[in-house]
Length: 313
Ligand code: PAZ
Image 1 (cartoon, rainbow, N blue to C red):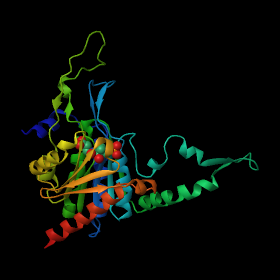
Image 2: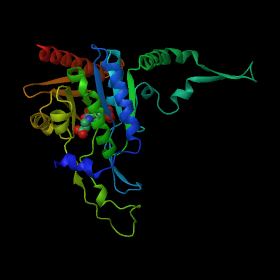
Image 3: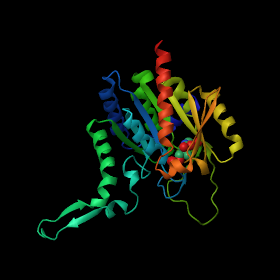
Image 4: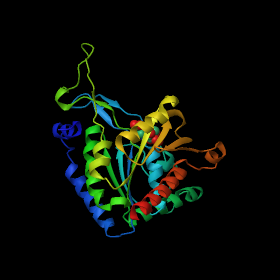
């Protein structure tokens, strides 16, 4: 058995796995009928590696889910069907625009004349903000082009990722994988984990193991014809391009988008085996409300279309 096969053999699927597998299957079957429909699987947010079966403590991976949720909106704008595989409580498309109490502040209660039957209105000065987002959200819902599936632990993520790939395989080159989730590299195997909360009577000895590299079977076996884009996050700029190339060599996928933790909102590098091209968001562009995910998605779609044309020849 390979290390990833062993991982699946030793880790049970999440309790709602079968429901999610059916949702993925139905969503894909619906869109498969339309021969011009492209589809993207977006992974977003960080996975956790639990330290206990009854999990009180866990090792988390950094990611707010901004990259994935913003990109989902831009893929929808460009006509893609979107499977949004995201960490529970991380940012989601559309609602990401309203954090904290912002959304409630846009509403007012109208009970002056109708104390018996009060209603809620959007404040006039908030309509311009809410309306375009609501329109796009409704359009995505009505055309059934957005499926939300959520995960928390790295094991849940790996089960759902494989199920999503199985559902996507028939799309062949029409499928795009946009793997922006920050996936744990280390974890405590289920057999080595205590059942109950670790007691604080002494310093615990926690031994982490390597999570199997899932890009290998994903690219090689599960969706071999899809256009696979992975993300590489580093904190040391001097490693960024070399690590991205190493990943391309190992897994043989199409593109790595490299970014540095502190500058990820305004600079990314598109790395292929033979090229590296930056996308930079200027201060003026950021101030005007442009998000870097818009040019990122635009460039990926261009490359996906070129890839589809090449394979079709
Ligand atoms: O979710 P976010 O917008 O805060 O950050 C996005 C990101 C840095 C997690 C993503 O761009 C990325 O690099 N994902 C891959 C992480 C990794 O190398 O494990």
